[in-house]
Length: 73
Image: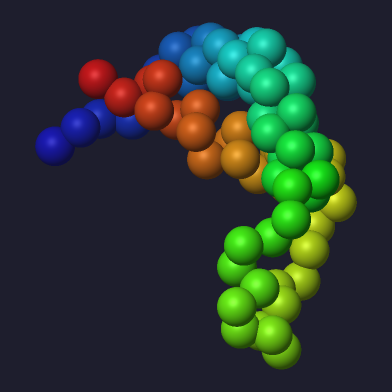
């Protein structure tokens, strides 16, 4: 079994996560903005339109989903 991560290591990983988030957020923001500008192709089913986040919230969600892959391994 894996033991608990020491507090110092956990803080270091949190700082690394925040730095990577700050570095990659502009790219995800651009992707989210482009996604809003392009016509939606998923409108084949009208009436099932998902609730939309703000562009900034969408960019943060994309970044938070992608960044953990940098810590795998």
